[in-house]
Structure formats: structure tokens, C-alpha cells
Image (tube, rainbow, N blue to C red):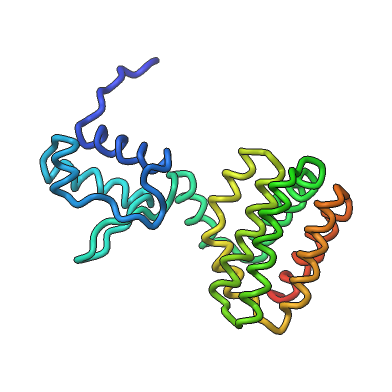
Length: 223
């Protein structure tokens, strides 16, 4: 038996409008959203209605309020927020297995589909990662390591895979910070260089092998 449809409440309408701005990229992750008076004026709603909508989106993981500072975007979509929460409570070995599945397939597709622009983006990230390691800057190293993998995924030209991968990058960066040190930096540089060359040469098996090498190294670090 069908259930009679319900109209959206005013709070839900406000929440959907804010969510839409986030998912369309108008309000990006890390951005502080407009202050309450400005949003109340734009949306023509009361303070209580706006606060309820923001509270709902905070619970959903899209927004985060910092006392005395404002409200910030902390995820690009509800799906991304859910995935990040799941990963945070998932065993790191299981997370590595998921990474292996995604990155191995993406590497093979990137090798067969990459463009010159893709290669340039991957090369830039690889060089910046190497520079960060030379400076012993672990935070920058983790950032560019993740960007390197994102560019490889992007070179697969599979938008769904890229979207899914982008949602795990926050947790992935934390994993790099926890499992990586500069003692093994040379190995990761070599395996990432191998991956880059395989993609440049459009060698799918070699691209998959490069992914296997660095995932196995990360797995050994955890065991």
C-alpha cells in the first residue's frame, strides 16, 4: 500500500538548498559558510529555522560548527561523509584491500586511456611529493601522495570511480600519515615512478604490478 506523500518542512527546504550549494561545489570543503544574518536574509527564514537546518546538516556530516568561529563545510556530499565515517571505524588492512581493488583497476584503465594532460598532472604531483620528502615535510608529503593517486584515478576517465575515490581521500591521507615514514620514502618514490612510467607507456600489466608493490609494502608495515 502506497503511503501518502508529505510536503517538505521549511527546515528541510533550507537544508536541501544548503546541501545543493555544497554538492554543486559553490561552497567547497574547508570554506566557512556565510554568517547567520546573511543566510537568514538570503533564505528569508527565521534564526531557529536556519539553525535547525544547519544542525541537521552537521549531524549528516556536511557541516561542522566551530564555537566562536563559524560553520564550515567538512564534506562534499552526504555519501562522502558516510564513507569517511565507515572508513574511520574500519580495520586498516581492510581499507588497504579496498584501495588495492580501486587503484589497481584505475591504474590499468589510466594506462589505456590517459591523455598528455593526465600525465602532466601525475608528474607534477610526483615531483611535489619527492620535494616534500626531501624537506622532511610529512604533512605536505601526505597531501601530494594522495593527490598523486587522485590524478591516477582521474586518468582512468571513469567519473564514478573518481567520485568514490575522492570521498575516501581524507581517511587515505590520515593513513599515509600513520603508516609512512621517510625511511621508506625511496621505495615509494620508485614504485610510484614505476606506476607513472607504466601509464606513460600504456603498459597495463606493469601499472597493476606497481600498485601491488606499494600496497604490499603498506600491508607489511601494518602487520
